[in-house]
Image 1: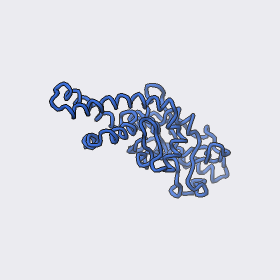
Image 2: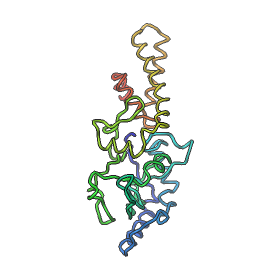
Image 3: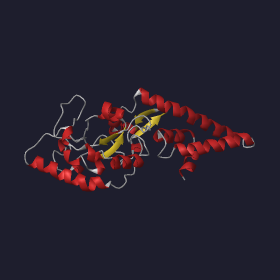
Image 4: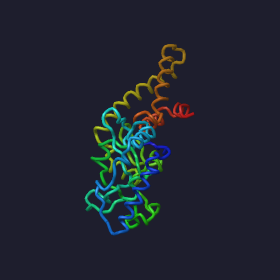
Length: 262
């Protein structure tokens, strides 16, 4: 995961979305307490302008695992706080209603791959203090302390590090630990994809180190220049697995990493 700078809300959410929010809140006020998934208009929160804004904002990557998703699946417009129902833990009974009043709220929407969203996160939304959970639109979600990292609010690198391709919670961070577990960020298929990129990264790291040890070898210096260019591209937000790449460079090429950040 990497920090994501949220862009401006698509117009449909400011207009139609707000109308939808008022309507569903009125339903709650009139006594309705269950809002199933089909209670929400996917044509609004999942509108092509919303999805395109998320794709651009996240550089075509899953907000959680950082995999490029456009070439393998359309991706899901993911509700960070589940709209219809939620669970504190995997084995807990489903609780309703969910965060129905945030179904069309831009700050609650992200783009996720189907694996992270449908197989792992689902309707899980654990809080550090469950008793402070907002129960309806009259409550303030700001009193909540989510254990799942929201990458548009919290920089994940403060909580999740990498030992080679494997993520781990920094200083045993409960936020890092919970996020890795809920999203399956250490699942083997994902580790394998990161491992493939890691092998290339280490190859270029070795080239740069050899060039530094042999400054008079012209051919090697050219290879090192190409390697530096590759690594510069690899730490940009639009690259896959940027978080792992940054961790690798910080470990093996500290000075080069600082140079690339400039």
